[in-house]
Image (tube, rainbow, N blue to C red; front, top):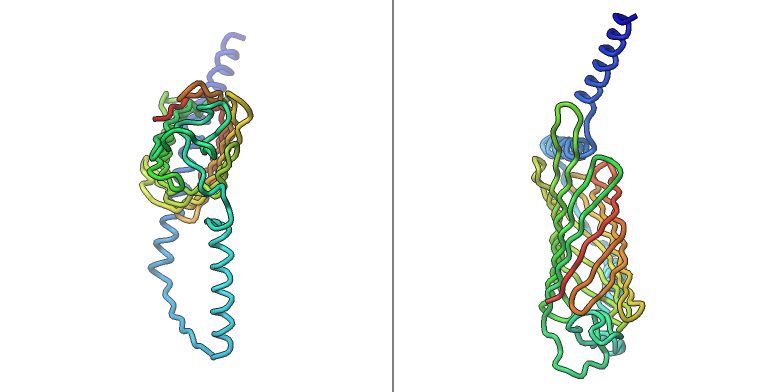
Amino acid sequence: MKILARILVLLVSIQILTIDLFAQSKIERSKSELKEERIIRERRAGEYSSSSSFSDDGCGGFFEELIFQAALFVSYYSLIGSYAFEDHLYNDLAPYPLYNGISGNYDATLTEEPKLMRLDLENKILLSPSNVYGNHLKAKFRPFRFLYLQSDYYQLWERNGIPSSYSHLSLFNFNLGYDRLRFERFNLGWTIGAKYIGSGVNDWGVSLGINAEVFLGKHFSLSSAMRWGWINSSSVDEFEAQLNYHVKNYYFTAGYEHLKIATPTYNFMAIGFGIYF
């Protein structure tokens, strides 16, 4: 019986060891899929070439130009707005949200000198029931009241099995942002820019996003952001939603973050803090 028990323990140990050695972690799957897409893209670029020509048939070209101009007109007022008819676009940048208990990021009745520029910093720890955890550092520089530069840095780690080791992945976002709606208690805007994944992938992609924040009272706000991106034809998407508690020029935050990097998805509880300069 003792020999049989030892044999069973040995078989189970070998099975666990085999699973741990050959099972690929989520982070490694994300990186390998992104690399594979790059290889496929480069191979297709080397094998495929095409040429196209465009001919203007007069009347057809006129209507195409008309439709193009109309699309530009609609896109401009949807994305930028009308400074002649929308007074909220002239709201000043607040020194920091809820500095007077009323105004959020923008102030319609600013009595002191307007804030010409502002730096917002935020850091969150990302926790999950799985072996994956991480950190999200965000910096938003507002050189003007209507445009800002935002950078996001994600660092993910995953604890592997046997042998004891860690997989890691770094993801960066570099975006230009514009707040389309700039009310005292609500702002909504869009971002456009680039993504970069390091950790052996070392490649760039595009980034598009929207974000919003609503201020609920003297101390609280709800904020959310979605950023879509593509690297080597694979989607790299991010979603965050959080509750913020403001105290003077700093705040504490807790919420949820979701990442999709190629096929694998990552879900986190996020807790952290931020400060305004």
